[in-house]
Image 1 (tube, rainbow, N blue to C red):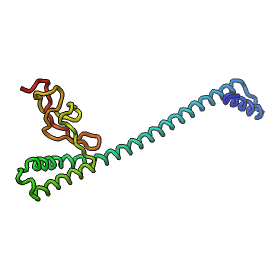
Image 2 (image 1 turned 30 degrees about the vertical axis):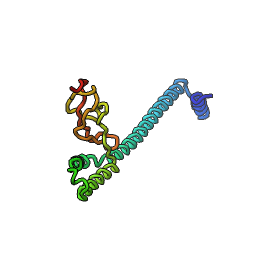
Image 3 (image 1 turned 90 degrees about the vertical axis):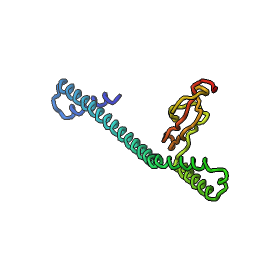
Image 4 (image 1 turned 30 degrees about the horizontal axis):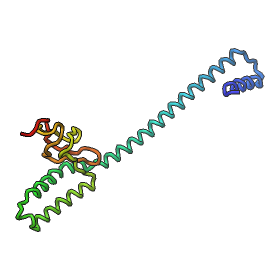
Length: 181
């Protein structure tokens, strides 16, 4: 006997035991009301379960957003520090040969490495550009010059990523497929 048959049997038993005269119309009416009540109860249960699932998904999404905000909270500060890092690198690259062994130059090199290492610990990484295939997701083409088609020929400004996001694309010159003359 299934659930509905069991309900009908119980309904008829209750009505017989009460001793009341019961017409088939009233039994059918009661069965109809019971069926409607069960349908409505199932709708409420389904709605409640959907609400619970939505709330659980909302909480998970909120937690992910919170972690994401923490992960990228330093992005603006790093963007402001990158020009300082660029200046350090240019200064180190242009040290005259006769001054290369000077302790002061060694100190400047040490400061530049320390700044770079500190930023790396915070999730900053360099985007490889030189001699790579041009990728518009991480490279910004400034101009095209003679060279292999679609290859980065020259890097004008280093690009950086913070964790998995591009913080600053590398500014590059891309080969246009013409041979160097």
